View 1 (tube, rainbow, N blue to C red):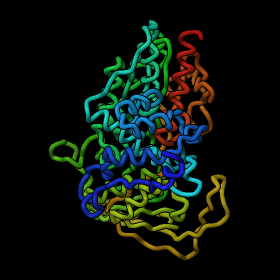
View 2 (cartoon, rainbow, N blue to C red):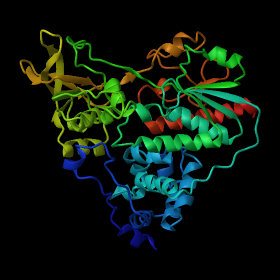
View 3 (cartoon, rainbow, N blue to C red):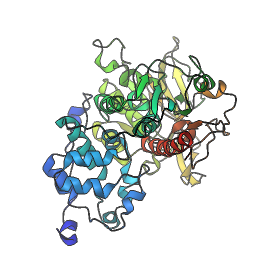
Length: 466
């Protein structure tokens, strides 16, 4: 097929659940491509001699390579091509912001719609899993070196996947009762089914990775103790699970939940399937979520599915929202109400200390701030009330201080993240590396994985003296 014919093919649509139906269930929203649609979308790739899409991928996937295999109908082979660089393709195919990374660099994006790289990635990974054609990657001979990984999230899983293939013995220490980190506790079932996360984790375990759950490093053992008990190197990928609040009056009232708690109860602890699972859901009539990122969208859409009227309050306009356009669109379709250019000033409560509403102030956009976004400025005398019985601040997270507090030799930045050499992800301690949200602050899954790949390469060189 020549370039002209390829450019005539329109971007293929992904079918998804009807909005009025899906707002009442936790089933995944997009259905994914079928084989015919995947091949048709893959035919849109122009097979550029210098593919700029690869430069936009934090984990350096051979995008033209796996897309070409899909076009040829070699779907399992496409999944294996993906796994050469990405240990979690079924995950990143769903939650990676491809539109601002690989897809925006696609040549087709200059005058139209880019190739749906993320949807093709999801298709290939799903095909491999569902068809039972999963093959374990080749492993190098054992090196005799042992690595401890703290945290079973995207960064830790990436390091584990790379190092196990290089012949090192890998043990992951996970504080929670299920592996997956933010993939399990932070992202809802309707956006990332947990069976997919567990299948990706199972693949790594079959490769030889050991996972020790319910193990809190900093309590059960310190990093120095891990190094003293036979591990030759340590990777810290403990994430940023400490929620941030607005520090406004009333935030201690009954009915105020951090987005972490609100989502963890549903996602990891399966509250939405009560009483099959023992965790009771947070039942509300009117939920107000504060924030404009993906976590805010996840919280608001979860509230809808738990039977509440759901509202998002955000202090800037829709244009400045950091959430993915797709997530905002889905929230709007499902019936989440958006109160933009609105800033909360006080949580209101009754005589029993329970939330009754949120006092807010109208905002207008002024000059850009250091982030490049226009700074919100209060409109004098514009106070108003929003009725609510539940308020969920979704304002970002900071690193949990436990590991830094129990590791005296670890240097931190002024934001209390771990200081690293960005070229190697090495910390101030010999043999200790770090990556993901514990280094960058709350960011994306794929950026954490990118740092994990840098760390894995440097750790291999450290362990082998190469």
